[in-house]
Length: 146
Picture: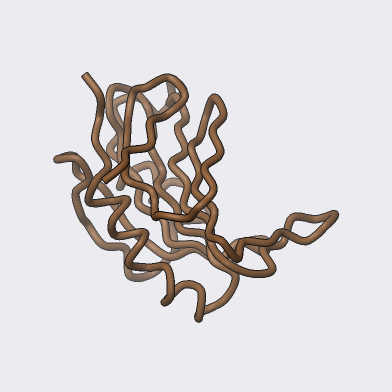
């Protein structure tokens, strides 16, 4: 089992074998072998992307739970079927999002003033079903590095 570490080595997870890994200062992504973005406006044409994205909370959100933050956002407030879960022992929320050409399963949580989003972005229902097990593995193996 090979762990993929974030660029700053603050977290790690197991990425699916054969997937391409990309890292930058705010995310670590694994791209499926059939991943393809369109030219121009970035529409996912095939495959899937599993990303861990991080964002430092601004002062107005500090002290809020992830449920409160998601409920206060006009884009996510009315999404049905939000599910409470845990990632790395931290309370999280999971939901499906379809917004501006992005179809995704999102799992979000907060640790030490940082919002973590673990996202499965998929091109269609077939890709979602095909790669859901890979997403579950990333969630199950996600851990913070001491």
